[in-house]
Image (tube, helix red, strand yellow):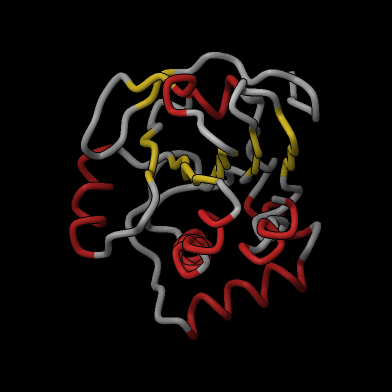
Length: 179
């Protein structure tokens, strides 16, 4: 079942590149953003992560923290993050437990991944390319759609967004307005 405003997020335990068995409810403070992307080798995901990192001080000023969820395994994340650190946690979910629990489904095809927002998707892929993000290793489901959730300290959903395409995600600037 998809989450909507007012729902409570189910209890979930996750791992990062450096820690295992972390309970989400133990980490909730202020507002918590779960920014669910695809995998670390995805250029569009890297672009989104850069956008979040560049605005992270402003996000923290809004009493918020960000956890990015990716299909990437912890070892791969650690390797990438050692080289390109970010100021937020990245959750490793190669088994897609969080995606399944939150009902974040993949697109029906690669074409469907971009079709609903074709122009916006093309622009975002071009922007990622201009920023120097090339495609890395493929991990998980290539057609996985992203999502975004804003939670309060009790785990109540303040905002839920299930993307219709790869590019159908709020920017970090739009996140700031939502916060």
